[in-house]
Length: 579
Image (tube, rainbow, N blue to C red):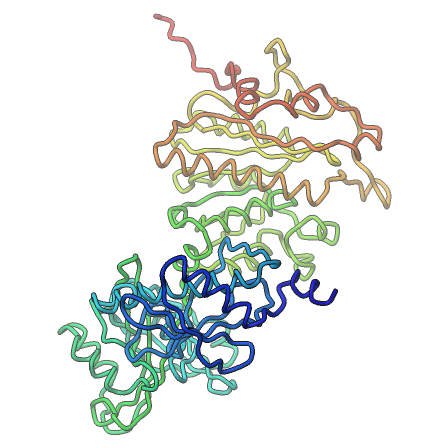
């Protein structure tokens, strides 16, 4: 019973059985395999003969975390792509990996062949110029002896320049930080009151190979970089060493090189200088850079770089609006103006993204403080006034989109009318949440052309109506509740429903900002929605409109035709009298 459970959760594999599986898999591909003496009882050691050389593989058969087992080879005498300084073979990044824990010996065999194929390709790469190795340079640099993790807060853009370095030597493992000379210091640097140190960032077309085991990084590496510097870079080098050339210095050199796969690799080293030159007696410490620059973190985190230059105004920073703001920021929008005159209160905590520490703070300021720290490069302009006051000085030329998240139809309809017909054409989203668990809505219009929020306020005959055709509730029903009397009345919106609606509205705006900008479609109005099950609303005696049931089987395209199929009197194009 114990063995069965162990196998089901990915328990240890007997080495003998694993070798049989490896031998069987190799025989299918006519690969000669010889078992070697195991360094440990749980390690399978085999020699596989390839086209380039004989590979000694060491495979961990004690892997129990439902991932491919650790595989290593003898540390190569010259660096190889996907092989660390100590010989570990990077056989898989784990993305999309699905393993059957009931077939452990086959997993070992799969790992062995995967490592073999990778090593063969790496040997060919080494013989043909190390293209793939330099694609993976940063991974190799990480495992060099004494390598320290560091943070680069400047953009690695191939433009050589002086940067400012800071080191926190009070930690058990020292940390380095690098920023532009005139940039704000990272919080860690300010907190520890670290002194600045000179550092130089240079970009080269190529780089010498780093050391292979057992060699270490030495001043010869710094000298090799120095020999490759251009005249302009040599001027920067003189700035790095500084005017005082007699006393010993600790300096940092950061180097980027192109990756054929795209982008730039960045490595760095701390070295000593004395008497105007490299101190060949001082140790050299490799630094593995972790990039904290906005553009890199955005691309690495999945945010759009194309949206970085966009500016969106979000009016209303409540339960729905805060989700819109957060989603737009996470998607990559670089500048947001957030308008709301309300303060964050204890009533908001369970359906708002802000923490309780922001209670009694104006919501726009709270989002500014919280999100600018969360999303590097984001700039939020908080406006603590009503939307009407903001509108008095708003210039649509500065915005790429607007979202109204008030949930106040009268105010939103008035804005729809004043926005219509503006010279600068931008998308405008109106979003609101239905009570309880009924659903949420997002109506998108453009400031020019036909289609507006008023188009939804018509009956089946197309005549103006006080109630929206998109409402899930029958009109004229009280939906507010209170726990402390009339002064504490509120509409029972749910936090999950608010998040869902905020996401709907943000995605609605982002979809047209990207597709229209790319020329994939022309600006046109649209309507999106989601309909809940309505159980809670029914329990509270609320009556739903026919559209609530119909919406469940209606596509966004059909709903859009229902709302905007015929423009209303507020947005229709006047007929030409001469026609």
